[in-house]
Image 1: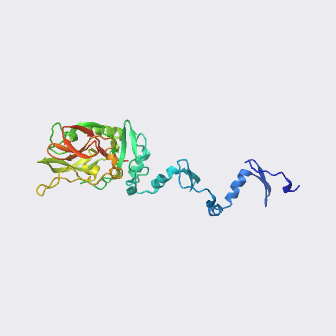
Image 2 (image 1 turned 30 degrees about the vertical axis):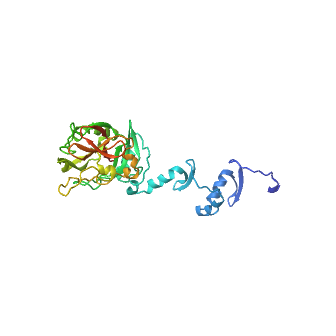
Amino acid sequence: MKIVDYEKVQKLSTDNVFLIDGESGTKGILAGDLAKALVGLLNSEQFMSGVNLSELPQINALSANDKILVGTSAGNKAIAANDVLFAVLDEFATVEMRRNIFRGKNLGPALTAAQKVEIKAGTFKGFFVGDYWTVGDNIWRIVDINYWLNCGDTSCTTPHLVIMPDAVLYNAQMNETNITTGGYVGSKMYTTNLENAKTLVNAAFGAVNILNHRELLVNAVSNGYPSAGAWYDSKVELPDEIMMYGTYVYTPAGNGTTVPYRYTIDKTQLALMRLYPRFINPHRQNQWLRDIVSGPNFALVDYGGNSHYYHASSSLGVRPVFGVVG
C-alpha cells in the first residue's frame, strides 16, 4: 500500500507517531517532539529568517494584556506590555536617570531586606522618584535620590533615598509665642515638637535605616534676619523653601547692609517637586518650613498651593524630610 493511499488527516495530536529512517534504523517519534526537533535543527537567525513578520496583522497601540516575546539565557519568555518600559529602565537606568523619572509604584507595606541591599549598593534597582511605601495610615514617598551625597562639613558618602510623607503627620507650633529667636535650632519645633515625627519615621523604617548626615542650620536671628548658623547632626527635619519651591521666597534677602544667614546644603529643589509639582501640597494642608521670615514668622507651604508665612505660635502641619539607607 502506497503512502498516498492512506486516509488524510488535517490535525495532529501530541501522541501521533511518525516513522523516521536513518543510519541507526527506523524509529518512531511523537508529533509534539518532531515539531520541537525540526525547529531545533535551525539556529535563531535561520528560524527568524523564515518568519515573515510583515504578514502578521499590524497594531499601533498596546494594551496591558498584550505580551512581548523576549529571548533570555533561560529560553524564550513573555513580558506584559505594561511592564516593558520600567523593566528596561530598571535594568539599565543610572542613578541620575532614576531621579529624573517619575513612576509612582507601591513598594509594599515595609522596607524589605532586598530593597535595603539595592540602596546600600547605591544601584537603587527597583526605585524611581514617586515610588512609595504604605505603612499604617501614611504614604511615605521617594522625593529624591542621593540628595545629600558629598555634602556637609563631614562628607555624606552613604547612598540614600530621600523620603517625605504625602500628608502632614500632625499639627504643632514652631514656638509657643510669636518669636523666631534662636532661629530654627532654637525653636520649640526643633527641640520638642519634631520628636513625634521622629518616632513615626523610626517606626515606619527602623531607626538603623535612617540617614544621619550633617546639616547647616540657622541658630540666631537679628532684627528679623537669620544671622548665624552651625553644623548639626541631622536625621529628621522640616524642609526648607528651596527644597519645596526651588528658591527662597519669603526668607529675607540682603539689603546692601544686612547679609542674612542663608547658607544651606539643601540648595536645590527636590526631584519630585520639580517633576510633579502637585506633590508640594498634595492634600491642601498648611505645612511648616524651617526658614525664618521675620521676628514673629516662619515660612510655610499654604493649603491653597501658594508659598506663605505665618506666626510662630500657630499650630500647622508637620511634614518632615529624611533619608533612608540600606
